[in-house]
Image 1 (cartoon, rainbow, N blue to C red):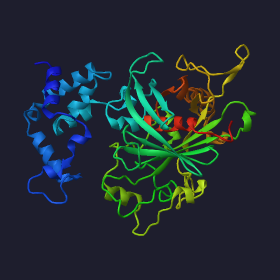
Image 2 (cartoon, one colour):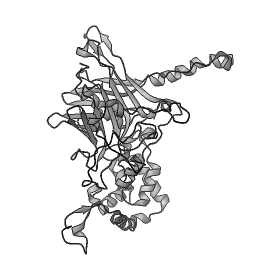
Image 3 (spheres, rainbow, N blue to C red):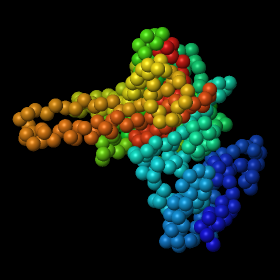
Image 4 (cartoon, rainbow, N blue to C red):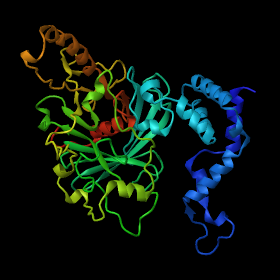
Length: 447
């Protein structure tokens, strides 16, 4: 029996692998009746019982050596979607298969492939770009992110990744980001973050439901959290809201200063991540936050707290600025700053141009390319270093400058409601999608 047929048999044995398949209906449980009939609950004990039944299946008793060999061959053979869904199906079969898949399937940073939903919040590849496209629906103010399955720019063949919905308020605009394309709201199980702007559309803040590695040094998360009514508290509702990035657009009334100029401060990514041995710390172990009580305690460590709404707070109070260290009085590690690449004026075409390498076909003010801003290097004293070390500095600085010139994120228009989005390390798909959403928003003081 080939490993393809093994995977097919496992998928047929366990049925659908969607999240809805794990819901437990009270009406279907023996011994329960009355006014609770028909309601669904997310009981952990019921999920553990189902997991125990699954683990008792014959597939869970395969020898580890054979199972590991099957997983390796499946990982190498099914490298693209939609055939890569077999890898996800194998990981969802049972606990033993899942643990082996975690060891074999690498993160996008090393393999350059998006496999599990967790990959949406993990950094992209170091040696290449992950090509995606965004489809806009103006009638419903929604935006859908897809993974490109074809090298053709105008091809709409893609795998759904994320969705966002625009909600216009009196003093700000909010974009809710979810992994559920049918229910894009903050109360859904697929809610993973949001993005908010000020009234002029010049400042944007990206919020994540997962705490970053430096959550304690960021501005208070209480100001960025929503109001929660005691009647609406549910174990499935995520409450964490951490400011992980800020996007600023330079004031440019009537376009007198040329194209747009934007700057992205990634508070959850240190500037040292771009070094050859640098890493992005604090990568999440799961896409969706934990239960309500765990998220509640991690967001509000004290017993007494207060929650204020964004509309009643100043924008500067929730900007996520890094706070100084109370003990040493020094700031934390400098965050990564991204700036848009300045376009050049084309005399023959009479327009501003950027080299998107064929990924953008329509000129638009929304098009941009982001590169890492040069970091201010400390100037060492002449007496502190020998002469041979002082002469070796230009060569090392030239290699680091080439890394900062790489395009980390590019976004551009190809049709009326279709845009390409290509990103790489150290950004994740969620962060890149949120930054691109800022280009869609109306900017009263930038156009």
